[in-house]
Image (tube, rainbow, N blue to C red; front, side, top):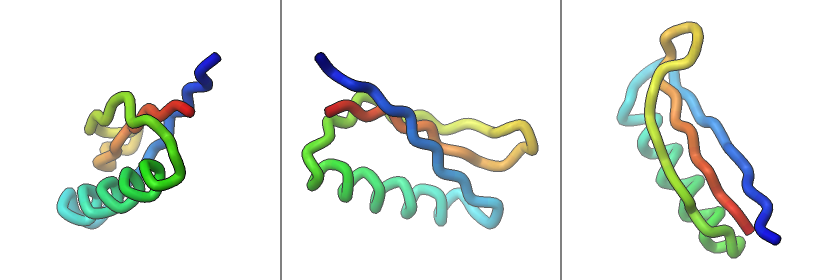
Length: 57
């Protein structure tokens, strides 16, 4: 049975910084054996750029 997890990352300063954080996180989780299901970008309730990452193991 697969277990899905949703991870969020956000950055108030820049979208470039957010993309770099997401790339680093994706590489780390991939090395740990997680499957990356989806990555989407949006805004949270305070209009801060946020990434929503779904992973499973």
